[in-house]
Length: 176
Image 1 (tube, rainbow, N blue to C red):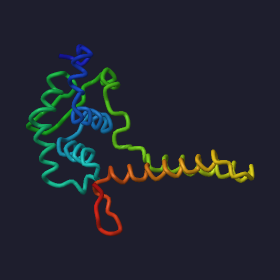
Image 2 (cartoon, helix red, strand yellow):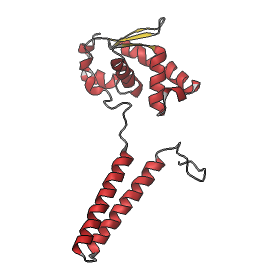
Image 3 (cartoon, rainbow, N blue to C red):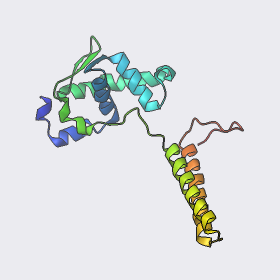
């Protein structure tokens, strides 16, 4: 089956799995073809949010088995890749623009939200502090607004730290 013969439902089914989306995305970045070893290393790195050199053998093996047994055969059956299991070579077939809307556009380029939160909280606090200083009054509304900005900053810091299980605190306690 050629990739342009796929229905929207079939495309949703094929790309409902992150490993299949990442496989196609990596192939696009590599110019359309790669070796299975390169693909396994990169997908494992994305999944574990770590550089490829820090990926363990177990993490690589998990990705390798699922790609080899499940995901690459499915992509080949749907005419998206040409997969040679003996040579471990994968090639993205032409007309990949058909499934472009189903891929992760920012894969590997995570936005650093904590910096945005920090900038917004500092900017908001500065604006309210400046407004308070210029009015010369102790308006309760201005003080409440500054307090809200500080609370938002504190909550965003807590949220950011709680989502990083590998983060170490000064007393040696890891975040959850």
